[in-house]
Amino acid sequence: MAHGNSTLTDSSHVTEAYRAMVRPALREVVGRLHPDVVRAAGGCAHPDAEDEHGLCPALVLLSAAAVGGRARDAVPGAVAVELARLFARTHRGITGAGRGPGVPVRGVGPAVLAGDGFLALALHTLAESTALSLLSSALVDLVHGEASAAALHGRPETVTVDAYTAASARARGALLGCAAGIGARLGGAPPDVVCRLTTAGRELGVVLHLADDLAALGTGRPRPLSYPVLYALEAADGTAGELTDLLARARTEHGAARFDEATGRRVADLATRAGGVARTRETARRQLDAVLRTVDAVSVAPQPARRLTTLVRSAAERTHRP
Image (cartoon, rainbow, N blue to C red):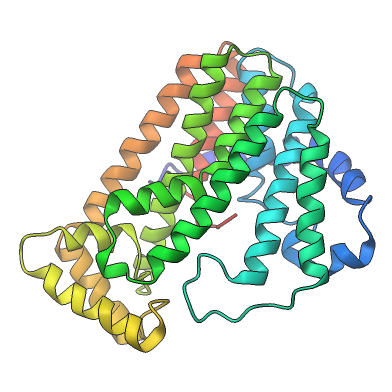
């Protein structure tokens, strides 16, 4: 998954340039909410809070430019997607969604109002746009994915790779697909191109999930529910039995949310020896190649296409959850 420091540096310039286009409009829209409500959402929901190093707004604007449109015409779409992201992050902070059972619930009240306010503003921003249907569909997918992920965490030893991928494509990929699709729609692309870039954005979400799972395992603190572990459970060398026992123990002792340090090291070793790490890396490489092929196939403006490719490649190296 490594592509060199130059890719990351180039991407930082790209994302900051496009975030700068979006930030004033986002601040203006969020300013319509009561300040106490915004503060209640916490730092993760501030308009300047980082989103995968600016991935969503840059993805909207670069997708618009890559298909031959003007980035500035897609700013309302970027604002709407950022507001949807703030809605999702605020509600994750309240419910602990995606972190497994037993996670404390943060205070509600004004925080719920903040999340709902971000959602209302997101929909209002695109109320008269043909891109609204893409946003509303993504929100439905996002909620479905969060619910699926929470359910899967309950019994990680019984989860299949396909079920995990479907949940991550929705929970992690919904907004990324929405960002790419809205950018293409506002850039004037035909429906088939909008559909293909939406799918590519969802696939990018899976790539980021794969990268996160590999990074967690690399620190010796693997997630009980993760691609390396699930792939290792499919091994025919006896590893699956021990892993299943360790997962069941984690569910009993820690609500399936985590391993203790010694168990985490053992799980990481088993996942590596059973080929789970290698298969995860190969899946991530294959998925990333598919995303890049789509970008190349639908782009008509070379410079924005190169920037979009740089953005996608560097995002695959990041390990931050939106």
